[in-house]
Length: 275
Ligand code: ATP
Image 1 (cartoon, rainbow, N blue to C red):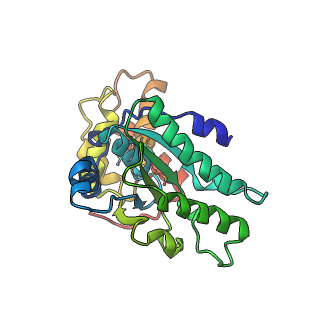
Image 2 (cartoon, rainbow, N blue to C red):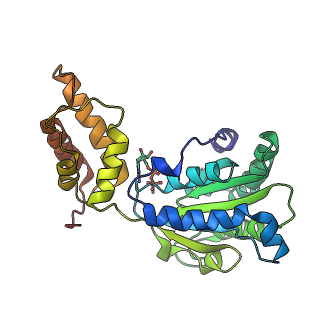
């Protein structure tokens, strides 16, 4: 239900240090956010403030985590919605929901006594596909027009300053009007983690779990090529479940190997050998 999504604004507790294997993306994002944080300076220099950042990359690599960490880093209220929530059978509903999302973000920030709000739109390609294309129709066009209109209306002197972060794994499908200067004019690429990245993520997701002495996380990371952060989280959880079922007090290397197989079977991964 869209109303409840908008209402369930959260105080995101995610920090950049909770995100593994994405140093390049984090640095790029932080650089853009630092720019926003030095707001007075930007205004003095007459610089157009950044309104939108597009996070692109495969599913489960941490785009939502990055958006939450961005809100935390900039001390912003955080509101999330998914592109599919804007698509309705009835004309005008999508556009109305976009309006409501922006309005709710402003209200949330005021309620939380914050000057900033981050709006996160996941799967933006559903809402922001190329206008007039065969995959698009009138209703989509109205919705995307409303989003563009809201972003164009964001002013430097607004009582609540908004930043829109949007995520997609189909950047090629987006309407070019979205990526024009003054809209989503920054793109941060998020990649599947390499071996070192996978190790970082594994450390994050096993920090709260008892590991047996035979566990070498570096070897586990090697076994997991092609895995996203979401796969790694699920694998670590699965390994703990397997250990518990056996009555073990700690997770052994064999539990991890079994969990890797399980995740691989479920995920039908496109496992290209990686670093
Ligand atoms: P989607 O495109 O499917 O929306 P996403 O890129 O937004 O996915 P997230 O929702 O951020 O991915 O990640 C899902 C879960 O996977 C996270 O809650 C976290 O447990 C784990 N995860 C993903 N990426 C990372 C990462 N880089 N570091 C640590 N955990 C991660």
